[in-house]
Image (cartoon, helix red, strand yellow):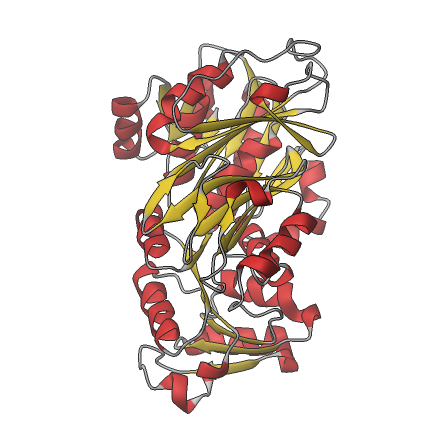
Length: 438
């Protein structure tokens, strides 16, 4: 059961509908109508804080209850009320206020897992500081390997091939060239300005990045953040222990005051109508090593990133609040960090440790897709070899003890292994059917 039919609730319902019985509860009939039109699941019209909503159910047991409305109070209260009317095996909720992370309230309410989306966004931004050469860094709960993109900026006389960077713990699984994305073969030549997608051990990839990118800073010291909203404040807090020179630019005086009080003398907070281009000169923002546009409006975030690029700032990052702008940001050469809603979707999927749940992530502006299936103790795949994947432009790996095995090198599956498939989005349905049918 999913409480809340907004963006997060819809995306979760779509994912679970493939092999599970799903019911979505919301008081907004239009949101429920949209779900019914597109998904083969049940919907229930009602207030998630009202016991009568759950009394109308024809069943009395739920394996998983997920509360993802925009209201912390509604999400918390719904877990109490549903538990009084229906037997719930596990409860997961989404919360904005990270006060609850260190509170006993969640334990008292018998809530099993909580997602704090703004904290997740801050952690993703922080990862870029730990790997300055990276264009983006994706982590997965199933394994320690990372999906890292690196822009090729080196001496154009050099000619590397994909096979030059293949190791037992690293693989190149995608290349974007002049806005075209493809799954490479071992002998593809790597060209200047290619965006290369590595998967594997972060230490190995970090060493390789020094060869491939000569322009991105080796170290980040001067930081400019556009925005002082609650999400932006969490980003700043995650960076305070890195000895950085941070400037926050915000036009909302209320946000400026809160940020100043919260962060005290750790950063410089500038109250400005930052739509003005000249602020890059007047406040010396053009000297920044990185610019992070963390406002609540994606269009304005894009504008600030473009302006920063015009001033020669190599690393520009935008927080993506509306998924409709994700692809555009990527096409403009902006490093995209998904905001709270999309972050909540993926975090909840990763929390559900089940052999029948496959984690799916998109990358390269939505052109690429990766599926990960963890092998848990109860999996029927243990001691078996995986059947062949016959999907065009796809790569299949078995990750075992931090080593990557290709389809030609497969070992019998062991508990703790991860099955990983990379492909193009247009082949997403074929890959999904294959990995679920194993």
